[in-house]
Image (tube, rainbow, N blue to C red; front, side, top):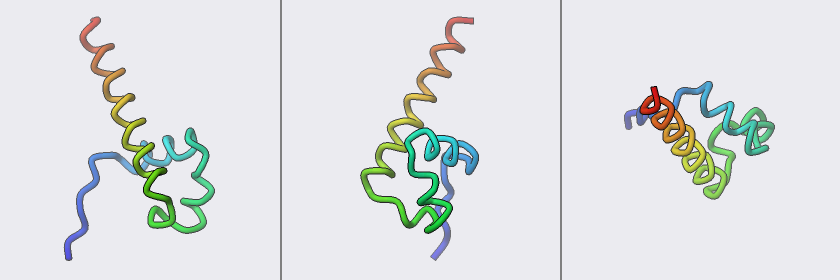
Amino acid sequence: MGRRRSMMSDSLKEEIAKELGFYDKVQKDGWGGITTREAGNMVKRAIEIAEEQMMREQQK
């Protein structure tokens, strides 16, 4: 089974996990240790970040 390519860089995922308060769990148990809710919150936050970046690009 091939590893799915993530759309988020590892550094972005780590940054979001720290921001959302569960990076310690990732360090202890790996990405498989986070809950479905935490994963969903990560995706939501990543989308917000991407939207903010797009807005900034359009304002230039």
